[in-house]
Amino acid sequence: MINVELIKDGENRYRLKRYGKMAVDGIVYADDELLPLIMTDKSLQQLANAASLPGVRGPVCGMPDMHEGFGLPIGGVMACTADGVISAGAVGMDINCGVRLLATGLLAGELDPPFLRRLIDRIEEYVPTGVGRNSRNREITREIFEEVVHIGPIGLVERGFGLPDDLNKIEEGGCLPGVDLGAVSSKAYKRGAVQLGTLGGGNHFIELQVVSGVYDRAAANIFGINPGMLTVMIHTGSRGFGHQICSDYSKTLLAAAGKHGIEIPDRGLACAPADSQEGKDYYAAMACAVNYAFANRQLITHETRRAFKDVLGGGKYASEIDLIYDVAHNIAKWEEHAGQRLLVHRKGAIRALPPGHKGNPAVYRHTGHPVLIPGSMGTASYVLTGTEKAAESFFSVNHGAGRIMSRTAAVKEISKEQFERSMSGVLYNIRNYKELLDEAPGAYKDIDRVVETLAAIGMTRKVARLVPLAVIKGKD
Image (cartoon, rainbow, N blue to C red; front, side, top):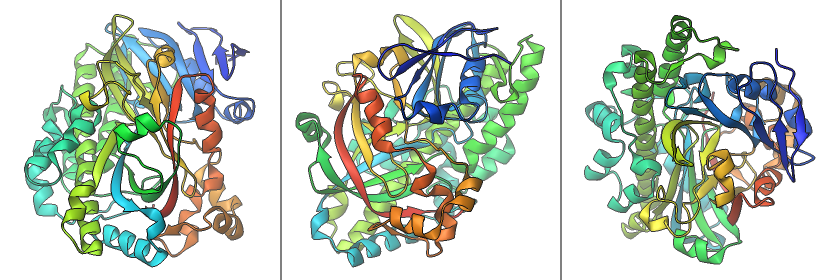
């Protein structure tokens, strides 16, 4: 075991001092209240473990929402050189779990609770929720499954499941290159072929929100965000397809590590050289799941637009629901940083490019792309932009609030009264509150404090704050 030691290194910033076999230092971003929460689990140890892998480029980074995961902590960032490794555990089980935000032409203040209830009921009618649920468009998804794996939502839009402009507002344009469906197991294939257009369970959601505050009017105008606007946030990933790929390759890469003489500090960080056959196969399979997840959120967007059209009773409303942006949380990508080509693993962390960066989509080149930070159920979400100061984290920031309580502990410790108080004024689709306790706001860190941690030191700029009005969750 490595004895981790944190040294304060400026405001909201701590250095994880190099020990044992660590090849590089780490950086942990936290304020005085968040730091003790990080110290309660194994996330610092996991960050130190990642710093000992071959080819890792410093620093490994822990975000304000960091908490213990499998291998790399959730809220962790690890970059490796071309002669380094790739690790499935440093990407995560739900490959390209991510968030997209939609702007509507509606003012939330003009919509009453019965209207919002009709909206979420109709959305849920079109979008299956819960673990293991299959698509209601089974014939369509089987036909287009291989297509979306290769080109993401591009084919969906061409088939009418979306607007052409949607493709200009998705990370990587919705299509990560390097796909090889031959690297995917038959079991993963079967799971993916029937789940496109489904939400899933756990922390995934579809949420109706109101823009409660705007901090950067110029950026908000470019993003299409106005005070009082009704927005829709969609949070889901690659479903059973990505989960199976991660499960398959966690075993494959564990064996590969031994074959290539790599000493791994934890099974969760099973890895192989990125340029080995095993490493290339994992990347190719992961890219399949990345594109699938972008397409999944695209199909859900189409169904959401359809639900709005039904409830509002007019075709024009579908085209007025515009995509603001779509970002990935769990991904490994080849990027250029400080003139070097690096494989950046982000697990529970998102890319946050500054204004002018060539990686931004053209429409957001001058502002930096929207950085979408969902809160926990019942709490606020944020739209931010990255700055040049985020270069030290490989232009990465936190992806949400971060858990402080396990699912089991939340169910045991959060009372009905506490849950109802935390959800005051927010509609939700599941009648039995006990089925939502593992995702109750009390199980998460304070999203306002988490966001302010990086904003205070200039790594991000706040653009807008969104408050939930109604939320759709799936049963675990």
